[in-house]
Picture 1 (cartoon, helix red, strand yellow):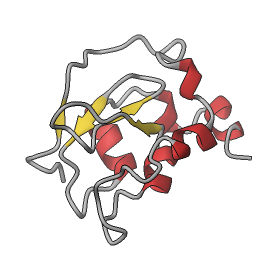
Picture 2 (cartoon, one colour; picture 1 turned 45 degrees about the vertical axis):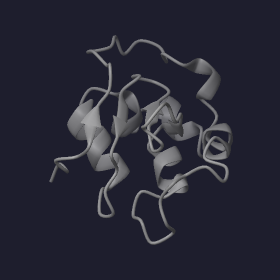
Picture 3 (cartoon, rainbow, N blue to C red; picture 1 turned 90 degrees about the vertical axis):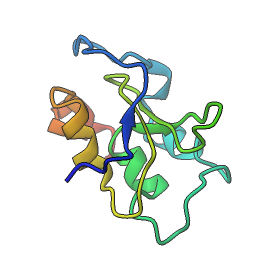
Length: 111
């Protein structure tokens, strides 16, 4: 299900040939981006680890303290609710992103 409050922010259909934000390809770097600033409790399903595994890094901006951006497709999502599952939301909002399809290059990053 798509949370009604989870919204796209300033994104368009990207070309999927190469990462839009190559500096964030590294899983550990994406995970570190959440630091202490992630605004949701530990009971929230969208944890920093699951978000980073789904290709997202934390990039808060203005009133959007929970904005996350996929390093590959560039989709930006805000308004995460307690039961939002990162890979499901990623697929719903950017169905062609290689990160969520587990391309060999993406899977190699988690070894």
